[in-house]
Length: 479
Image (cartoon, rainbow, N blue to C red):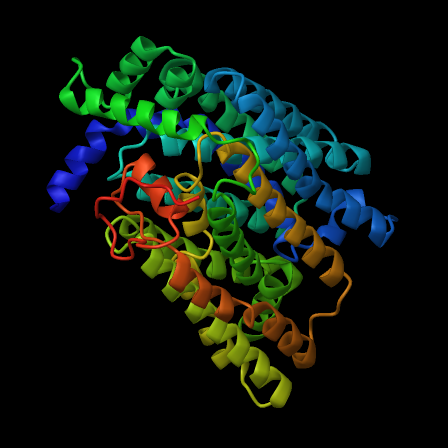
């Protein structure tokens, strides 16, 4: 497919990305609060931390992740019972209240804790709803790029939040600026949800609303009549649901353990490569090169995240061309090798210059941006049995948030200024990435340009897995 044809196809299918825009805007807002546990963003310089113990500060910051775990399981309950438009209004309400509290009480510990809790709830709900809704409504040619774009928006929110948190202000503080941005995003999200959010045909067919499902697909595919492609899509969804009807809801049975384990490994690799400890080390090294003061610390974060965003945008448009498996392998191996090599170097010698360290860490950002954080989200949208999908995604999202809590609580009080500390942290973070990369290379099927049913079958098969991508799946599930 040429560039012109791809652009035309993307424009024709624009209603599909519009339908998940509310969740994406919510994630963009909540990710700005996520930044505080990913970067050392001068939290202790904010007034709400004055005369507070380290334990109180840590609890306040990790409340975001604890609430995100709760939010994921709340979304699991809601998504099987209510339409996406209704859930999105709940999501908007959470973000609006959280943003308002952040604006009104930016210097109050209880206010910040409450705002971060609401944002965490919204983050957990939004992530699960967007991944499920997107996976079920997107055409197979665009599912990869749009699902990867969700992670790109999350990274964008993290960058904005980290930069705002690290710059001291005399007037509006960072929490107020983030709250104002959140209200602006939610105003736009409200109208997008009201006008452009179309329900998933899978959800409708599960409730025997076939006529409504056909109308929804016609709107999503920008068609004025019921084409044979739409009829085939409805038939395939019905077949998929009938196949899944004989299974139970346990996420550990009926072959679901395999995709669950593979995506959990992908999430573990994502957290190991992009966490508070690793990011703080990178920022400290770049600070040495740039000789920045505390008021200019955002420059280091901006450089790191700009590289991640630029490369991530390229990877986003490549995920349906090069495939999920190839990008996952290159990203995981390159990041693991660099982190381990730098860790061993810092432990073995004190002679490495900050300039060289900065160059190598920027290279690791390039490697990490190729797919370590985005590919697991793409796979979440297509890997699971429809009866198990919501709980399975909630479980892997819970794992991701728990890992962030553990790393942040362990590392927060460390003095990550010496090379010995840098070396130990980098080796611990990088070493597990290499066996994870090998397992994913051996076991992860290639699902690019497959329908949602074909992709699900590939994940549930024990043998004959497609590694090359874009091939017709064997119509058999291996229990």
